[in-house]
Image 1 (tube, rainbow, N blue to C red):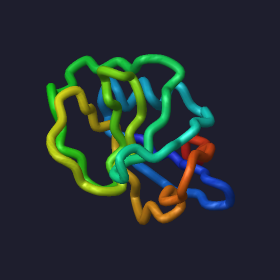
Image 2: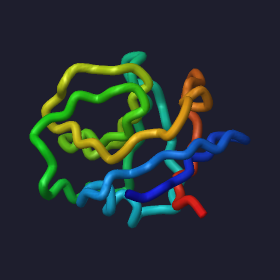
Image 3: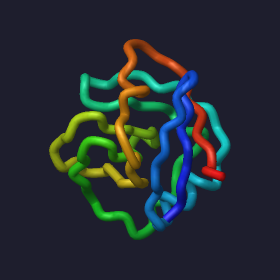
Image 4: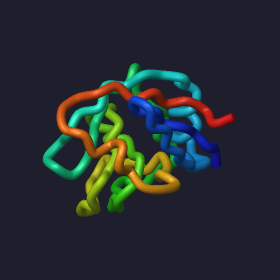
Length: 117
């Protein structure tokens, strides 16, 4: 498991990524800045620079609040701030270690993803 930070403005959030092919591949792209935007009032989404390795990932996943996921069919990052139903093609990358308040902004904004010190 790998600790990362997500910086939004002056707020720094921490998360722990799973030791999976997709989680390790996500870490390999860091540091990176991603443009987050709201999707259906359930999640924040961002386009990734490239597809992630999903070797060994289950066919579907039921996200909970705070989960960091990949929606494999579109190749985008999805951070859930509300729980959702099990969805085919959703791959868990990890989860936030605490509250997500800094992510709950309106509109689009940039977030910096990097390895924690």
